[in-house]
Length: 139
Image 1 (cartoon, rainbow, N blue to C red):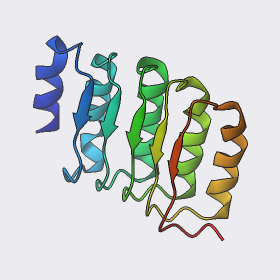
Image 2 (cartoon, rainbow, N blue to C red; image 1 turned 30 degrees about the horizontal axis):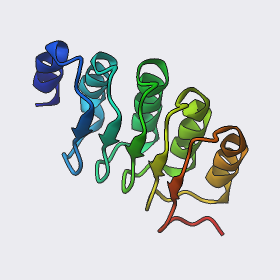
Image 3 (cartoon, rainbow, N blue to C red; image 1 turned 30 degrees about the vertical axis):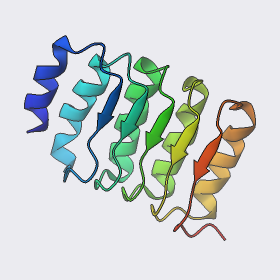
């Protein structure tokens, strides 16, 4: 599945939008996803919402995005079971995602601990225009 897509996209370096929402990713698919993200340096829109990425997936995705997708403007990781560790992974890479204007982390079981990491990263991220954190436990 995802590995075949990664292999196919080796010649798609100009891909700007990738929507893989609710694609039933499992932890063993993370290598394939990383392969896709490493090959799509022109990516501006990435939608992975509704996949069970967990914090491990967030680390993989954010590592690839931070090193290869500096033009990314929209990232949707909603409903992905990221938790506080995943939110921290997103926060840690925000500084390298300088073009990001839209970030969705809806319904990820993020608590005040995860939001503290995000809050620390946001002041230096002046391009962000939309931040979606609904359905988390951030009180």
